[in-house]
Image (cartoon, rainbow, N blue to C red; front, side, top):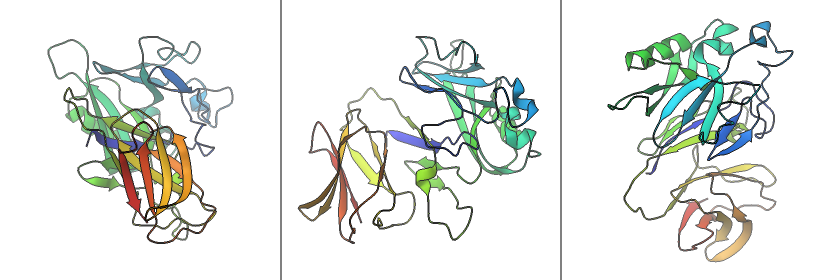
Length: 288
């Protein structure tokens, strides 16, 4: 339950591999993407509106959250040592769905910040997912909730995903064609938020699936998803009862998602076990 929300950030018509995001991201003090957007600001964007577009940066840590201008030349504020986490994206009014597609009603995820204490500056991050609304309507809802500063958007359309630990899947991605197989592996990135607590919480792993039970298919990608409340790496293994069938990954980052391509026939009754790399007694199982 430490993870209270997960959203996906597809960053607008970025269909390349998941290492190619449209805009820069900095997490835990490390810039993990420089950005590669077809809608600028680049020399020859898809539309001239985006030739000199001013992007916004959402910055947050344990004490504050704010939205500010992003400088594409210097990289500010991502180049600042004091900034540990930041996402660069559009102001909601600059999103291509509003500028180029006549502000259609759709699924969107919009973000603003609020000041809820007596200290100067915002410290509350407000993320809202709308199931069918225009970006103007979504932004207006945030204004009614008290957001006074900039509003940004990180996602929209069929790929929109919203998960909550208490309610489970709230909004799930939809297929563009009914005959397509679920391809959630093609969702570029997920952004998860955890509650901070001063109390010692027992480490645990919860493993599940985005949709109804689906048996992995030989030579076809299968997305393994899990939640945990610790920072160490994990191992992923396939079992039949007490018998080890395959060591899927002896060690991988505990980032909650792993793409597995089984090269064997997976039978019903097998289960996937994800274990803490430091303590094998901390594990979660997914029955197949």
